[in-house]
Image (cartoon, rainbow, N blue to C red; front, side):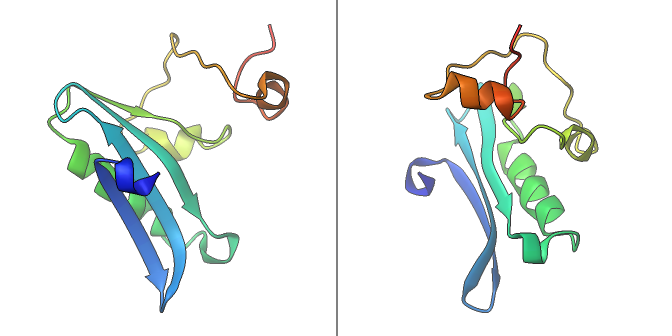
Length: 107
């Protein structure tokens, strides 16, 4: 996954990977931040901010930067300038599971 991404960011604690994120992008119009993760043991120390900030900086120049994130993290991402979309839609391999976890509306 990371090898096929235009941009990526990693954080290590010694040799241990503790945070990561990537951007799928076409180099001009659209960049999508996804798979941003920080180990629970390394949260609340700024690694998530560093990863997202780096990926946003690398994505500048695209006409739009889209973020795919975990429900409940909206306010964290709004601090970077992201706004909630009303038109985003998705097809998941497990639609029922995605609905249960809050990724899609069950309406």
